[in-house]
Image (tube, rainbow, N blue to C red; front, side, top):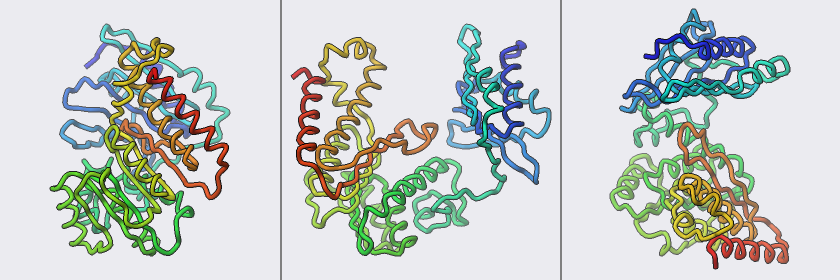
Length: 386
């Protein structure tokens, strides 16, 4: 424990109480813990027995989550808790505050004065969740497929270690819900390429079949034979009869019916490019893809102009990640799609949180597409030194 009295932590604790009193506190993220078995903790306002308190949720390395309620002496308790962490991020409707402590013991507090000064002009308030309040998700946890996939138990309670996956699945369905009007109203053909354990496949099928009550045909493809066999068995057990699971290379698969929606979660490296190419070449109406493991451009980048960035390995990777996804979107745009890069899920749940969304345009300007194709080709030449 860091037992030396810290004026910086005292100021931080005092500032948080002021923010909370103004109902502007969203959450506090505590990272770089002293405890070796802990990953991080998150503090949020909650209501318990009609009283608003601060609840600390600690995530451990054994995939468990522990809760601790701060019910009185808030400022002192916050100070004591903060002593065990090297970094603290405070998120509020008035802005963010960051506390950092170096290995040498130097403390830095950024943004506290700016946030406190902005409190009086903030109209947005944060409503604390009830302790047992059901969040407004499309799924509840009581769905049969979630139980069979091990997301929830027999009573519908989400397992602690699957909370992040449950939020991810629901967020993905929200993205699908937002493009519902871009898909047919009678029968929908959906393809999940590089489907893995098919959490999103089952959720998507359930969304169309059980929530919207429309006909859906779903084809899920992956190279792992054991995973495909497992998913087949789950689909049979819960009566998802219009789901087909195929074990093969997605690059070799020929789509038998026009794809209305193509989805893909965390296809590694160039597998994402194969997914996007397969979807666009078959005229998919909507493509939702979250890339993973951007390695190709990092290995082939050859651009003197960008050497001032690429000479730093960490910055090179981040730059290549962004450039790769930007190129992918530019390519899709040149093929007649309206494209967006969206935040898929809270980055605290996964750093792989970028979703590429492409919606096929009903009409296109051929000259504009030609200009975009030229821009795409010239950009590749620039980055690869061709």
